[in-house]
Length: 514
Ligand code: GLN
Image (cartoon, rainbow, N blue to C red; front, side, top):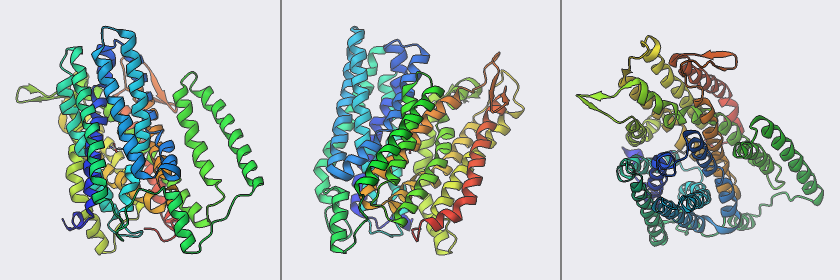
């Protein structure tokens, strides 16, 4: 695979760092809800709510982490402190699981642990993602392949983690959860050591300069000075105007979302942040017309991507219920655990990430490679097709009889093809379109769509058909599995279609970025 060869060595350091970090993230996540219900004895609803808030907030903080990195810390320092905070978080989880006989203390340690994990991820995730792009010259054709390789690293960790942390922690004895968290903690510590000891050896730009040390905002200023470029400055009046706009907008949104999600302050916060921060960035007076137009492209695509992750993230929720209750998991007399289906996706990612860069470069040579926004639309289309595939499986299913696991396996395979077309290419696109001084912040904005989607996914998962309950969405009744899956076929299908129609216009708005 020639597209996988010839990348800077730094990419493999980022690959390994991300493998270790994602191992700890997904390892902890795999046993977390079981820990809440079986060891800390939360009821199912409370546990689901803590879980949902955690996975939502983890993708909200990259906004803050991205901002701090661009302006003050620089990428290396943010990656380091992010990983350190996550290690503290994992060890607090380990301590929580070790003090089960003191319930109150165990709860406080758990909340403290989550806090550190949320803040740590905020510093780590957007910065490590934008670091990949800095290894290449702007306009380098290998960037999509680079992000796909990075994504492969992410998924090697995601694949191994639930198996190992699940094996150690989920034994049926609540006192064993601590071993799962300890394994996650050790891997985060390994992340810190690996990055700190190797960064000076491998992290260089193509011109041989050490990258990630100076904050990108400062670096851009320096480069602009050398090139005699000056950005417009904001006067005091504009600043006051912006302050008023943002204050009013925040108040209105808080009231609006507060009314919709009564009492669920985390949802209110996430949905409000999703609108306020993007607007705040656009009001920045230093943006040139072209920069603003490119940022708009990121926003529009990120909006559509919400529908991708909301449907995709059913994996941990409704699709796991479906695996457990309605899928025949019998293999030659042995019953495969329902949770194992969650490892199918990262496994498929690793395989497909190996193949896809070659496919794109094959198409590129024939001048047929789709643009980045079109690849996002293809991702959404594949998601819709995955659900359509499973619709065939459940259409004539007799109640009480489980369907073949071919259907769920096929769905995950098709979804993963979509993910590979959408997710790493999306990261690469954000990197190409962001002004340097906002490089990590824009990654934070990109991950914001995952935060919203995680919240949204939980709500949609609540439509899972249950006997004796009538559920409706936009006037449509959800009575069977077929109806339920159709919701996702239509949702991602429509989103894909609109994005396809917009993609020419978006490409124009990218002003020469491919
Ligand atoms: N599996 C990816 C990761 O953990 C997905 C991230 C996302 O954008 N939702 O990095």
